[in-house]
Length: 90
Image (tube, rainbow, N blue to C red; front, side):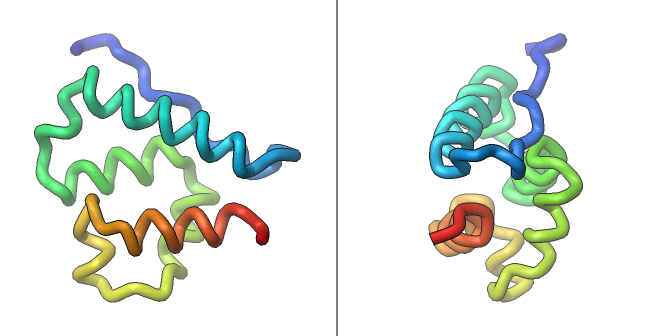
């Protein structure tokens, strides 16, 4: 879908990060379906994800305690879980 705008960057200064993440993730997943992003390679999906998340979150992604191979697999639950835990204070 040409002209479809990606969701806004994740607001890391939100007072309710859990809700921010939930809404942002839903918006991103909708965008990936509508834009055809889900049909792309994992490498492209991760690039889209990082681009849309924003630079600050990209820096967090670069510090994740996972292997380089795991960082290249878009659907890995470990990637999503670790990123979520880094963003959402427990």
